[in-house]
Image 1 (tube, rainbow, N blue to C red):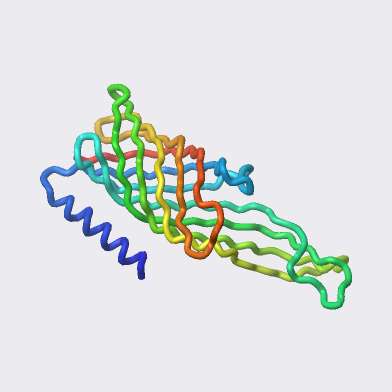
Image 2: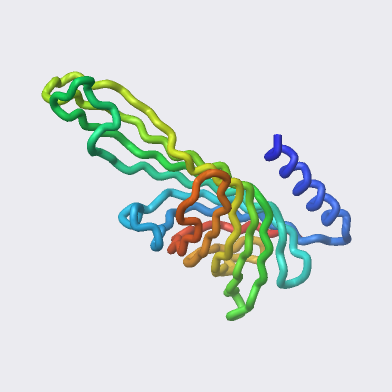
Length: 214
């Protein structure tokens, strides 16, 4: 319900902006991956990420709009199981997969800085509602017994929002089509119950196409 309300508020704001004379609209889908350089548990993994923007040019060099993003990652996991046989005996171990998935929607503000006739640098600040799931599933190996017990558990990483800043470049292919690339980002996550690391320095490589309509 909160997510639906947030989407309605964002759409109302954008619609009110669209009533002004000659707004410049743009759509900018991006796809790629990123590395959490400040998260030691994920340093060897590169989560896949998709991001989509629907924006309005408020001035010649300022854009605002809706930002949707989704990232996913799977890593193998193993070790001693939390489930052990009653009365002792051979140690039970677990083998499985840990899946992370984050989906977020919110607003962004970006400022375009001209580097040349066809190329611009644009920092982009964002504020989003964030839904984060962290689920581990696999098999519990019962000692020397070749049979296995299936298990699934969810870790408490219940974030409620995120804000941050990313750095991008765009190159003009035609008057209405541009190529974009992201190469830096800092992300701060606000949590509900999970108290752990919440500020991440990320090295993304996201490429996209931007369609602009004046």
